[in-house]
Length: 151
Image 1 (tube, rainbow, N blue to C red):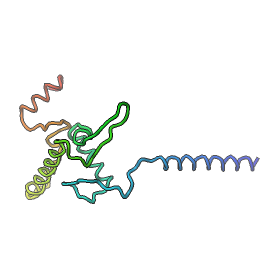
Image 2: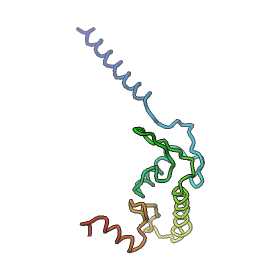
Image 3: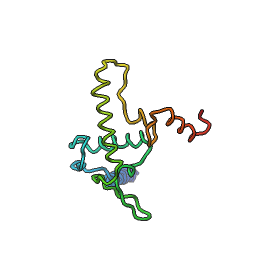
Image 4: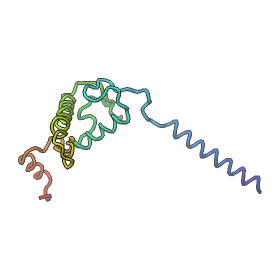
């Protein structure tokens, strides 16, 4: 009996190890040596994990997906293939200009106010999850018209 129990424990342990190895082998994480190309605003040596987190923040702030700024091709029934280095889409240039504007407002103006109550601005400050920034009463009114019942 004792041998059968230890044999079951060994088999269970080997099975668990096989699952862990299979999961590790199948991971789709970016290689540690992978570097982004054609960065013009963000640091050229940025960690890929940090870059992905920044891009996710932009997507959430503007309520868009990667294809809003990045050129892609897609075959029927397949996921899009992105060319992240491409400058083909004008939205990518606009995004870079907006990144520079955000940095300028935060570093040249807000940081000099020396008031701890003032928060740094982000894309979300104006966009609020919308593709177009909400910067006037007219844009706020048009947003309210899109969302009936939220008055």
